[in-house]
Image 1 (cartoon, one colour):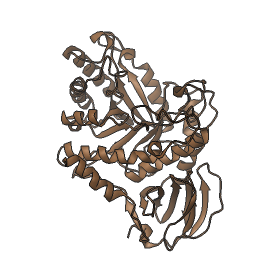
Image 2 (spheres, helix red, strand yellow):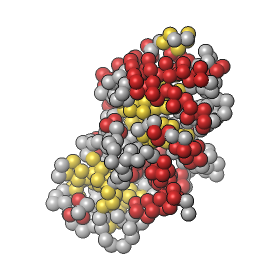
Image 3 (tube, rainbow, N blue to C red):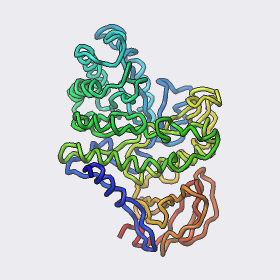
Image 4 (cartoon, rainbow, N blue to C red):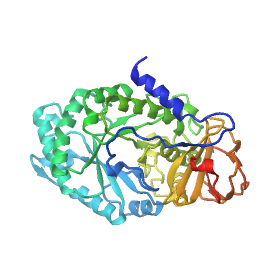
Length: 444
């Protein structure tokens, strides 16, 4: 059996909830290695690392104030080479200047993807010549130097494994050659820069392993993936609009993909280096799921990611790109095209409000692998987020639990039992635990 497959199986069994009546907490998986995770990628109290993808440079007309009200920590956006360099060696950074200034005023961080070709070089296609790569490196150096010390994470391209983004056809050797040209330029401009990639489209394990084999993990601080569910398409073709997606496509199904990715990282990373997985882009369009389910999935995606140890989760996306109900790409937003909040926006704000300042401890061992109870701590305070991938039913969380209050994923107070027997549904509930906290819930 190949070493990476064996490692993945070991990790699956190590992380899977145990059956039976012995309760405890499965701690958040820790990264192996002796090195330090880049400070920008460390797990910190909520809302650190939680955010959305955006498509604007100037959101002062409504976008940014609503984002700030939701309480998120960061956004993801791209910077397009051809927009900034319209003549060789002449750069116009007015658009990212405006965005970064606005984000800075609100205390929001930015994952900024450096992306795509330029008609001045290689016919506007993805870099394939040394001349183009050198020009790209000069551009990156100027860009990064301008924003050194700002709250920016630099991302290497967007979904280079897809032909639509690495034009005319995906090429792992060309992509890695480009990375090896621009990363030294970035680090020379800002030795403290945080660099992530490859912004993998869907979970293309073949392309990812080829990147690792060619040395990508020597260059980056974190592995960004876009784990849209449903195989080669974003959704299974058998799912009709507005139906609940099957378990293979719900947010928790990504955890097995993370196992495979982590096994590949362990196999190819430099000795001692610690490299986290980041969820850089991923959401559910309300063309295919109803708005209520999208809101549940946003909360479940973030909670499951945190329980796995994913320090950055960026929902796709913030705002509906259009108003056509039947166009999938128009309907990923947490707000409508005319800025009316969907349940996803309310769920986002509720999660952050309920857990602000808390850190994730781990996942409670329950009888079913489809049931989730994630523990969060802030000093001596404890909260639980509970839900199921299946039908509503009761679970027993363990002896000594005392619940003093609860709200649903939309922030509405709900009546729940005060003891350990609680109902789980497909919508997360946030339970406030009153002391004394049982030792098993402390992970002891």
